[in-house]
Length: 364
Length: 165
Image (tube, helix red, strand yellow):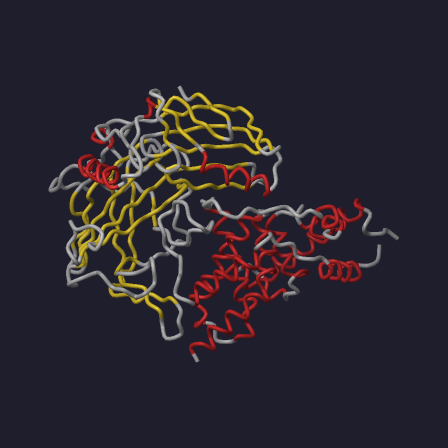
């Protein structure tokens, strides 16, 4: 072996000679991203559901803490609020049947936190409802911009229009968080809101079933996005502040079941082990253990998630038209999981089995 | 001027995106995650491009954004949304494997050592630049490079790609 410098030179030559292997279509997808950024069609900040692109890059800060419980009983209960919320979803979606929906159970899943949690000259934040089950929490907030006549602002950046909180998702998610998503509602969509109000629905899904007492929320910087003179998306901060508050996770009942399946699935000549199904009225987390598979096989498995079905005891089927899903995994870390968010709450005990990759697995 | 800046960004990114992908692969070791990290980095770079004073610093600047993004993904177990398109392994995998001898060896290193090797040998960055990108002392960069060289030598010897005199 030559001396160290020769080895160094050799490494440099080897590195220089090795080609960079990128996935098929990588350049085209990247070009599309750049084009969209430049043409004001930024797809940042979406609810996390099915989306054309794999990444979601607007998230909310969520921290667990042991802070005090805030609850003022000026409003209807969280359970009642969400009952009304899901009833509207079912009513407005005339393409699907939601007769399996169970909103009566929401009373037992509600948190005691409801009412005004922040009341400042600039911003009032009301918790309209919190429901928690298994590893899932839904929080609905109503924000009033007290000094504005309207929070509607057409900046031409869909879906980042209107006044909102700035998003900062660096170092924001706790280790307990599997997935966090949010969705804004304004009065052009929700007529129960005044022009200077909007709602935010947060869905927090934990790595495992939640046993925390509180969920601590923090909202940073209030303002609006805009396209600057250089055509770049920037944020105009109206109130440079942060608003922190806690919601209790003190529902009196819980409804979930975890079924360890540990059975192999062979799909497109690839093998994967179905490990665990954790299901609650609001969501279902399915964990798989890959068996030495590649990114191609991972893609095959991911593509088929839209064919997943839940079979109820009465034979009715809940399919992907009635839920949203996200997938995550890394074959090198030997994990792959699917998170399904039901559009309306289900009765866990009514779910007999799950069908995926052309096989049916009993969940009783 | 507005259009020029936009055009500059649009022209710069294609030059570096494959390298960014390789760096992200070094950290995340997943095609899907690496592409996500690159996409995120491009978007963040786009948003903050007006803050970059010297275009000549674009490469280390965007690499730093990418590295931060990749490490954030490592820490967060980022959720992914299914793509309509699928990634397909190359039909010429065996040919590719033969030409990626050093890359295979680098992927056997621990993550903290891997990234230093990639930035030094593949991206030909200086120790000082690497120190800034990874936010670690210069001494640590040197130390990790030294130890990585020893490991790489062992691996390449076993593979027969280095001759022992």
